[in-house]
Length: 395
Image 1 (tube, one colour):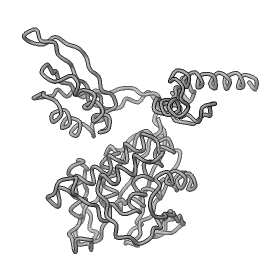
Image 2 (cartoon, one colour; image 1 turned 90 degrees about the vertical axis):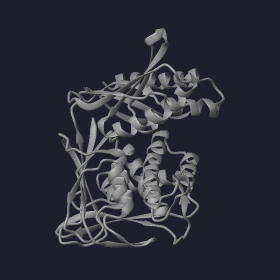
Image 3 (spheres, one colour; image 1 turned 135 degrees about the vertical axis):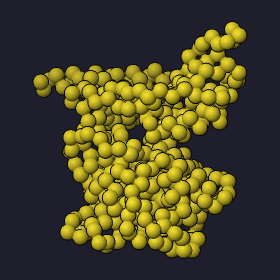
């Protein structure tokens, strides 16, 4: 399994993280091409340069956007994402990051989430940082992100709301909501931005994993500090035989409209659930009921538990610590007579043992070509068989 570890000893911002992805091998032109799918109303460009922070080299990214006073609500950003041609996974993940940002801003300002308009966070450069980071993780095939504790310090910062204490209130709220572990720092400048905290708070598990390194990306912060102001992104592999710590959340329900389950399952998957299942059961007083179960990473347990408690009639949940073994996987694109398809490949000991097309892509091509879903799946298997036969010729 391909994993990455974000070493944030000098903090993290959205542009530092994206610069580290580019430094680790994300092609700049691929990033530009994918970001163009957002169809932003104003031109955006990226400038990547090599710099030194202290004695160390690093990549520094500038997101070049026109000066604008436009503020965006969460719904505006959701509309930009949904209207884009980015993958479903990228759109859903980026939306989770922005939702965490919106919830933090709403709490800090004492307003409902739907009324919050982002200032720095809703600016074009921050949209590029968040969406670009999610694109980069997918493009590099990183399936799990880990991170170090984040530094917290004192001092003040100028913002759209005037002078604010550090860590900035929105950053501090994100750290609380996402259960981010913190380590003290003597710095008197901003080390962790709301965007950086939201990316890791949404995507990362805060532990240091075992891995075999394949690449290291170094992203530079804007300031020169007493130490190298960089963030290191270590990318590598973990063997399939390494168990992954997870949780199993379950509850029995016998008094809820079954039509609600579709909405609940969608919310759980959007919040990070790895699997959701429903099992018919017989409950007390001979009532037919449903066992709702969720498999998830430990970091997502509080969020998923809150969704179940809010969205169902249950009064309590059972949570069991579990672990599972996982095969490696990677995503690639193939061309069929109906268009390009994303395929997921299962890998054991470095060998591809199974391939399957992504369902959402198959549905899209079926609609675009006005053919049945089965026809699209058949076109995938025809391409797969042709590729296998051609490979034999060169064995």
